[in-house]
Image 1 (tube, protein in one colour):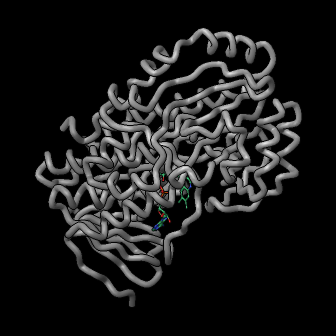
Image 2 (spheres, rainbow, N blue to C red):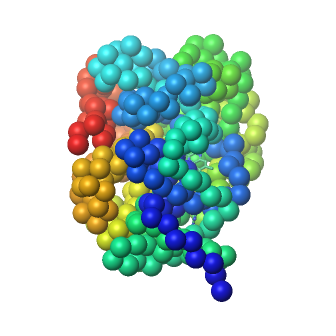
Length: 399
Ligand SMILES: Cc1cc2nc3c(=O)[nH]c(=O)nc-3n(C[C@H](O)[C@H](O)[C@H](O)COP(=O)(O)OP(=O)(O)OC[C@H]3O[C@@H](n4cnc5c(N)ncnc54)[C@H](O)[C@@H]3O)c2cc1C
C-alpha cells in the first residue's frame, strides 16, 4: 500500500520558475511549503530569458537579484530591424531611462542562472522543503486538505499550487476542455560566442530582425560571454516533446534566411549547435482555481515568447498569490479565488499581445511595408510609453 505523509504545509507541484518563486514569496510571509518536482536533478539547459522591470522589481524585493546580477547583462534597449535590408526601423531605450521610469532594471539572463538564483534563495529560507523525483499525477480535494499522488507515495497539504508548466497535468483536472494547439511556429535557439556577431550588433541590447514568416532575436547572456540567438520560423513540425533540448539540423533552418541581409545571415550560419521546440497556443482559461487548488505560471496561462513574459508572469503570480494569501489570513479557498480574479485579465492581455506581436513580426508583402513605415515613424519614447502597462505592474506590492 502507498505510504501517506501528513503535512500541514502548502504543496507546490513543480520547482520551475513559478514553483520556486511561489515557495520564496510564501516563506517571506511566514507560510511554509513543500515543493514536489518531477525531475531527479535540475538541468542547465534552456537559453536566454529577458526579465523586464515588472519581474526584476519583485526579484530585487526577494533578494534574488543580488544572486543573479553577476551573471546578468543590463540591457540598454531594444533594436528592431528589417532582416532582408538590414535597416534599423526603430528602437526602445531601456538602461537608465527604463530604470528611472520603472524603478528596476531590464536584464538579460540565462534561464539556468535565473533558476539557480531562485534555488539558492529558496534553500536559504526557512519553511521550504524541496523533494525531487516526485512525478505528481492527480489531486484529491477535501474540505481542509489536498492529497497528491505519485506512483510511490501520497502527500497531504493544506492547499495545492500547481506550477507544473506548459504541459500541466493539473490544468487538465481543473478544465478538461483546455487544449494547447500548435501555432505553426517553431523556435530555434543557439548560444554563440560574441565574436561571431558583427561588431555593431554585439552591444548589451536585444536585436529583433523581421522578415516574412521568420524573425531572429539575439542578446547577450552569462555576463556577456555568450549571445543567445533565437530564430522563430513558420513550419509544420509540431513536436509535443516537453523538453527544451531537441537537437535540430541547421541545414533545415538556413533556407529561411536565404534572402537576408548578409551580416545577419552570416551570423545565423555561424551558429552550429541549434535546438528547437514547437510553440503552442491556448485560449485563456475562464477559471484556474478549484477550491484550495490553483494554477500559476505556464500551467495557468501559457504565453508565446514574443513579449518575453513567460517567466515574468510566473514571478508576478507568486508575488500576488502570497500577498493575497496573507491578506486572507492564510485561507486558501478565499485567497485562491481572489488571486485568480486579480490575475486573469492581465495574463490574458499579455497572452493576446504576445500572439499579436508574433503575427506583426512575420508580416510579408504590403503588410510588411506598412509595418516598417509605422515603425520608422514611432519614436523610442512613444514605444517605451506603450510598454508601461507591462512594466509598471506592481506585483504583490499592491495588496
Ligand atoms: C528546462 C526548461 C528550459 C526552458 N528554457 C526556456 C528558454 O530558454 N527560454 C524561454 O523563454 N523559456 C524557457 N522555458 C520556459 C520558461 O522558463 C517558462 O515560461 C517559465 O519558466 C514559466 O514558469 P513555470 O514555473 O510555469 O514553468 P517551468 O519553469 O516550465 O516549470 C515547471 C516545472 O514543473 C515540473 N513538473 C512538470 N510536471 C510535473 C509533475 N507532474 N509533477 C512534478 N513536477 C512537474 C517541471 O519539471 C518543471 O521543473 C524553459 C522551461 C524549462 C522547464
